[in-house]
Length: 288
Image (cartoon, rainbow, N blue to C red; front, side):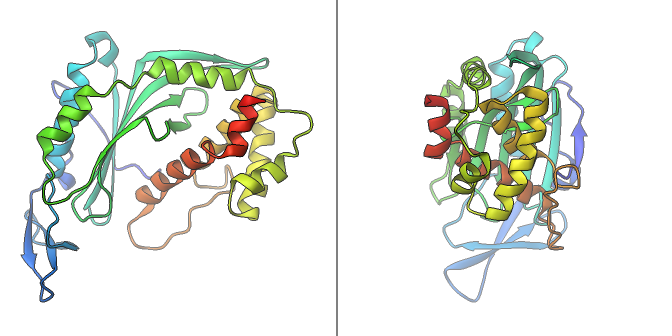
């Protein structure tokens, strides 16, 4: 994923970089149901939203997320935290990706062992391109593939007229995502061999709505299986390789649209992976 910067961790877990550190104002368009979004620092018009749209600024959102994380982690867990920032859509879209190296668990297959570290992602936009979101997941230390959980491993609130940042933060405080429970599930996948009767290419064509993409994914799975063994975790690792890299290493080069959306496009790949592992055919592998 294109990287804007690695933020220095001091007293505040998240310190927003200058290009995302701005307030927004709105200006009514000639169409009464729409309004412009304006970056108050630069005066640029960076979006058009509905007349009832309401949002917090990037600094307020990310500061709130960082404070909740700090309040719910020990000093030892926070030590060495790696905080990366990404932006898209002329800075209207922002993302902070936090890895806690000291919160970790081992995943062991019959051929390989790797450690997973806790990962927390905050996603925010002031142009209506996404809602206010926090995701919980892991990162694989062996290949640095990022992983997010499924539908129950996130907090999400839309930017409607009654959106309240304080209520969002309270929901985040109340969340009970469990990194170790997620890791235990992945260990189960590592211990689940790929059934002998399964044709991987045909399976992937049922899970992935693109035959060309499915065939490339089968090649990635073969590489992962060579290292990690023929198991469900290797298939999942192939999926997360796709969502973590977009170059000749895996054959899934990201198309350059020239619209400043690379970071956002890579994040959408993580959503694709979440859908794939929720597919009945993938779930059946674990249940087999």
